[in-house]
Image 1: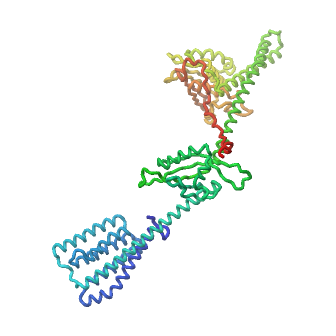
Image 2: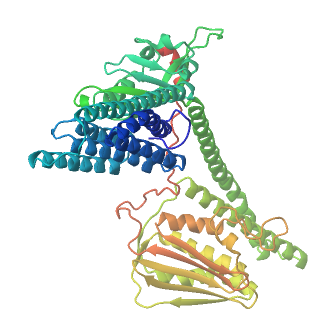
Image 3: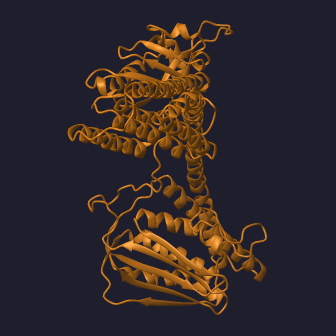
Length: 589
């Protein structure tokens, strides 16, 4: 039962009933007191004792109630009934008398007003009173000396008072629960009528028993217009099988189901007769009744409008498709422009090299310097074009891996020779640290060379003059550990976390100190991912950077015979298909 709250709650009415019982007991005992005094004067003290006991019990329990000791007040009233019943039983030699009837009222009073412990105690004490009555009757113990007429009158009056109090308590408690049940029903009805989602209750045979007020706004019609087959006709024809299946699971199988369907929404202000469909999420919950096990269940359905969410999903799918198309167009553009630039750049580099070699005639010192600058710039542009082409292939998932076993340490010397000029220009020393007894590496040798060249180029570029770049090669479990370390400028933690992003450079902007496109490490990351390896980096500003690549010794998880298998760099799920339910709404008619 509810504790505290409004005056119509059962607990509050129980407390009022306790107080009323005490007042009734005081009033009736006081009314009987003059007659009891008169009987005392003529030689019968027993009625005065019963009246005094009733008056004292009423005053005591009322005082306890006023001190908010409600459980003690209830116990006092129950104990008073038991004591009065015991006294009347001892005063009457017969086993079945009014005293025993009054004692039987005590457990009834305890069940109406008391807690579990008091109920249990009342039955124990009733058993004690019954045992006392049986013992007195069996042993023919002398009863309390009371005149027969006085005993009969006292018993009748006492039983009437106790019966009145018990009936009053039962009536008040019953009224309390009726009020409580009515309040509960009112609260539930208020909740159903004012909830934002539509609520519909179906009978066991599928008929609509109740529809909330919010369902009128959801479907754009009056509630009575949803009766019969009208609700089912509002379902889109393509969604009706799913709805019927879910409803059968709830109605017959007793299982909760949630589905998303399209339903027609009426709009009396619409200028056309074309139906408008909205997306609705329907939650079907069976009303389980243990007494009707094995039979069909009533179903409560909650209808929630999710049209805006569906529209957002479609918009996101379209935006994703547009982004993918833009990315594909970018890749095609890079591939096309790269091929178009490579041919003239090769000519520029070739002829500038011929000019510096005096093949077309001896050049002056100024012209030779200009030709050298043209040759250097052309080679730089060719390297940028090569990186762009490699990056576009990796992003498009068209970079072909041709894996075969090879000796990994054999690629270090050629890579050193390719970057030796750059290292000498930067005054950087190249050092190799190769562990012994390394196994053959199953990988794409050309891609591994490119990984090492890009790491060496970055390490040399960001090293101080007189610095050192160390390449180490060792086995680490089932992987080959390739590390490139330098003692150069290093990177901040926020820059370190972005390693591998295309076009990212630690020093960004037009005033950056170091040249480059920012594609070197992103290409490395792409090639390492294609080999199903791992790229790690550790760095500290001013102390240098160490980039570690772990390549599986047995190669990526592809069949060896698939020497030219295409391994996609980004395995993104396909874009969600665009729902054309707006166009299908005409088919529902």
